[in-house]
Length: 279
Image (cartoon, rainbow, N blue to C red; front, side, top):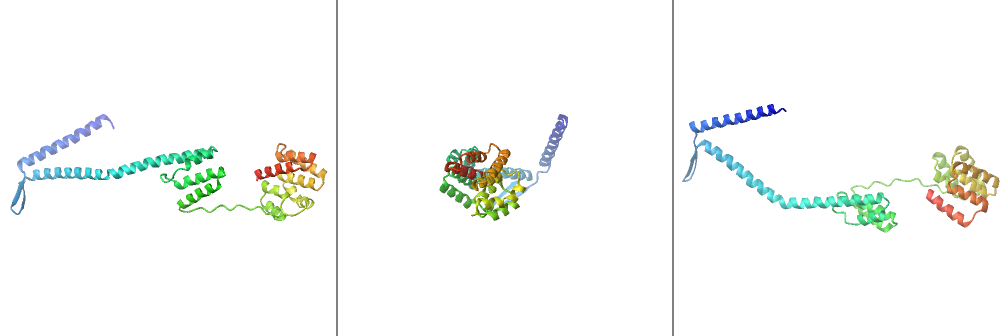
């Protein structure tokens, strides 16, 4: 809006107010009107214009007094609410700090922050879920479970846990599952599940080996089974295939060590820990 247009509007408004004032002044002077209030032995007389002015003034005063009174009446409540907002903000910042420490893989620092009371936070259930995860990473399982239960009590509804596939404990059911959906971690179990001997396992694994030629886990299992069955030539073939697939894999390096020195308790223990980490 240009300055000329704004000036024109102000001149028009002021001119209108001036004209209205002159008109009302003339009306008050020429025709003041008459208002009479009488009750019992009392009577109040005034002009119509004085009555209107008094009514406007009374309305404004009434609004100011009672509006201010209402604000004063709400003052303690407003103070409490402001204090609660400050506490909520500080608590939420503490929640964010705990989540950040957890993301940085510092569960001890996260737990030290999240162990504090969560009642002032906007999301107390999330607070206790993060505390539960921090305690779980620190292997404080009882404490983790307690925090988890605190979170669940605050949740309106608890999502059902995702059902995970359970690895079959027999050889043929495991092979059947792998044919439907191949999983490298499950393939490592082909060496130990069930009671089949090494030679029988090698025989039934041929169909999988033809289909999954790039499976490192399957090559490792076949090499281990061949060594156990005393088939050194076949074992060397599978070890060479595993080496071609991933020569730096620790399980492959253990195969070479086993081929040279045979199975030892130390090698078996190391292999077992490596397989657990893979799974």
